[in-house]
Length: 120
Image 1 (tube, rainbow, N blue to C red):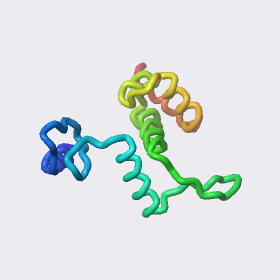
Image 2: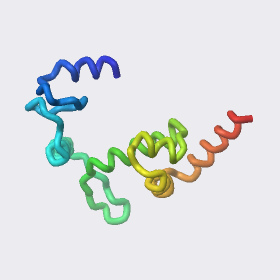
Image 3: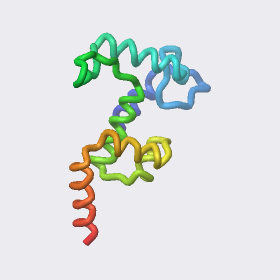
């Protein structure tokens, strides 16, 4: 991460830009600009989700990446909904929804067992 932050600091940056990521003009990304760039890369890489029922290819969206990251926080880092929400900038209820929808219940049970084991 340190190497990446050093590299990002070396990019063209307008004086008023205080964000980590900047666009090619050295300005902070706008929601539309970042999303549009993401979509162009996604389309070029042909990143899709194949619906298991219909077989139809569905384009992934930027929020899908955030949901995947949240799932990793829950399953790999074993964070609580409150902890993950703090990192994601979401409410604990939103994280609970991700947990219910995307996290395999078996993985949740294993994570709970590991936490219980570590606490005893």
